[in-house]
Amino acid sequence: MRRPLHLRTSGFTLIELLLTVSLVLMLLGAVVYNFSSAGNGARLNEGAGQVEALFRFARAHAESTGKQVRILFPEAESGDSAEMLAAEAPGATVRVTWEADPVGAPGVFEDLSEAATYVRSISDLVSVQTVQPEGQVAEGVGDSAMVAPGSDAPEGSVSEAPRSPFSVVTFYPDGTGDSVEVVLASRDEEDVRRFTVRLTGLTGNIRRQVAAEVNATETEPPAPATEAAAEAGK
Image 1 (tube, rainbow, N blue to C red):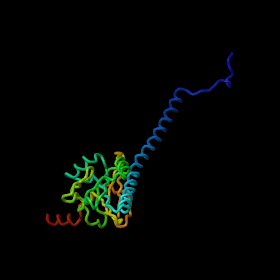
Image 2: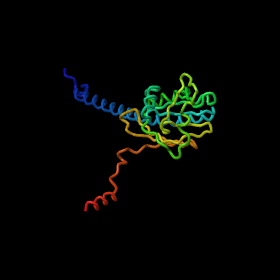
Image 3: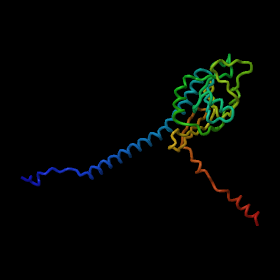
Image 4: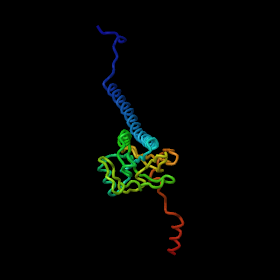
């Protein structure tokens, strides 16, 4: 006997199943891509935040211990100093040192172990593009980076060679420090943004903003020069 038409079970055809699976996969791919993009963008944000936190930590540590603290930027170096820092701290975006014994060993700086967490986190998240002065830079930067003549540097200390004052940020026991602008880039190649972290050494104020793209700053030759060239060609 034939079953009544209204009692027949309905189901999905193969084409309908394939279309449903394809739509689900497309939706899942879109969700994964959005989460991945958000995660990549968060790396630069987190890295900039860690740099700000390191500045505050170094300032507070120098003030509380009465000893200078320095943040070195190996990627902002050039020449022999860059090779030296790369060998001492391979792959590091920053390096933090302090003058552990300013009386017995003035000018001798050692790695500050308390800052190791900041160093690892920043090095994993961002790289340093440039380090430039911000406002009035504190005097004496780079002068005390030299080891005092005749003093023997203890094992594990940093015998710093003369370098650009803007590859080193120094924080002093009186709570002041150098004023700099640090341009950061994400370790993720897909994130093309740049963050500028500005530190005002006198007050310790820190500001962060998105840096303008290089291509956006390109301008045409100035009109007066063009008119002068035209007059000269007549």
